[in-house]
Image (cartoon, rainbow, N blue to C red; front, side, top):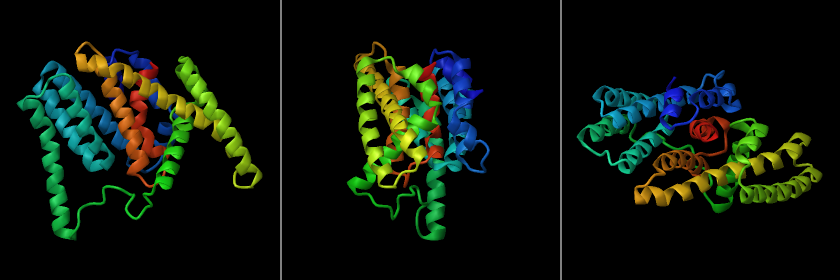
Length: 277
């Protein structure tokens, strides 16, 4: 329901966007697991839907519901801390910073800081916000995580054939993706001949890498085109919000999380579904 109203706010086909969300392979697989990822993204979507509605209509009841949903989301799933800068960006872009909206964001921050203080007082240390503690943070390790995250973008968020049909509209992006495909085929062949890759990895990885690059370039292009319009105040603000949502999740998956995983990428599905609709 939250996804439907969020998509309608961004002026796309709400039914298609919601359908893409619920049939996403990443969402379908994780919805059967006893993990916090699906409840986390559910609260994220509800919080953003209430927040944007409350800000746009200046309705206190929606802002209060958004503040409650944000608080629940953050305590459920630390990744949902990303809601706060995203919501703040929305306020700045739409010039909606006022006492009501600031209090809306301040309430979950205060509650979370209280939790951190209590945790520190009891355990002598703050909560572990990132699983990269003790993980290698050298350039090579980060590149490996970026590569793995791009592969999952191309193979797990939506069905690859559907993504090719939806996002392969820009010629230079197609050329770049084809170049990545060729390089990935050569790289996969070498590792397959060395016995490091199984047959399925050898066959699928190059396509998933190429489609992942296509998605990333598609979103970055939307961001670059929208930024001047947003700065000039003539449009592009919705695209900035969606691109910031997508790229923010992508980059913290590459830096703050220890390894690429489909469940960590579930928060990427809503903005991508809206773009695809």
